[in-house]
Image 1 (cartoon, rainbow, N blue to C red):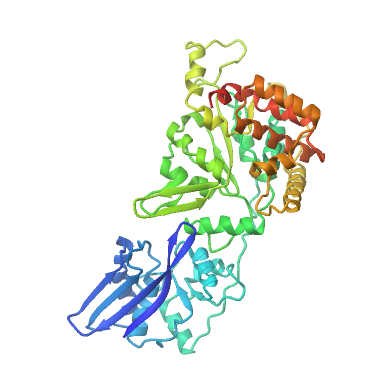
Image 2 (image 1 turned 45 degrees about the vertical axis):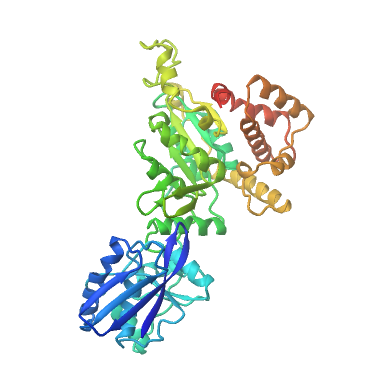
Length: 510
């Protein structure tokens, strides 16, 4: 007789059902595991054996065969421990053979029989719910699984013994409650930035329309300081965004205590990050920084110090909102709709253009440094801003600075206007102006006569690419939303063009 237990294999944030088949037959004692399993899965034999012994059970002196079907699907991860162990327990009569019917099982076993947390429980729960199954998972992951559906049965035991007692009726496992991280940590406030009013304005525009922003200025101008305060003016995640972000974090094993958070991700990788770390990859095709920043912010400080190939690998995710990882035997797609905020010095010494300073290398210092950034990459950035050094007067003079809460209120109002506009046009998949393209952009951001004339002249003089032209329209639409205007006018086009002037050379190279 073959005992069957349902579990899953992960393909990005999606899951594929896996049938764990256990057969205990007469023959020389052996424990064979087949089904295209990786090293972590084949080592499950020893963890399962030790966990069963610690729980008071011994494997019979028979031939044990475990098959993970379909056999041609790669199996990776330690979450196969618990389904294998429960299947064996059912096969030897330790639990009823039908106890696991209607359940999908994931979990890793410790040698003492406890059930350790694993990555990907939320996608596994979503997949199980779609198939009409319940879920058995580690206790630490129970709150995470409970978000899949309020009606889905979820068992989250601490150990194998606790689960056996539940099936035997000696102990009742209650359904875990979904948990939301309140996010009590105080975010850095924008009022702490002295001076730099133009840069604060650009940061507000970027937040309102989810536009990409590049800040260029000398060291100590406050570029990184302002970027780190962007999360304080961003609106919380919408329910659909919350689920997407949490599924990626779950696959990456980044959910703490099974609690979800409605704060937007903020990722700031070091400039030594590899291409696999940035866009995803590795042996198990894990999500990269662009996916972990989905619906949030990817901050790249010291932008030219990143490897040129790494920066150019961001061009596709910036356009499509997806990171596609192709391997010889499979292809995985992760969501990657992020907002890029970058900061850089004007040259390697950082003082190019400073009054009274002459670099020993001359103009080559700035040219060589900035040529590390390709024109097509820079053309995907909506807002380019030169940030001057902060003067001593700005630091000494106590100015009443606007707090993040006041800026966040305007950002939320602008985003609500954008969302309502897209819903009225039957496009519920769009949230911000940065996502609009093609006919929908021409509908929502068509400028008036004066604005059209200005944009046409600027496109010719600045040699804007078609992508740059459309990005100016998106920024102008956001400026109109912040001003509460129904249509895009000449002042909005003029201000949007001002944020492109610094990229004139790079846009021409595209």
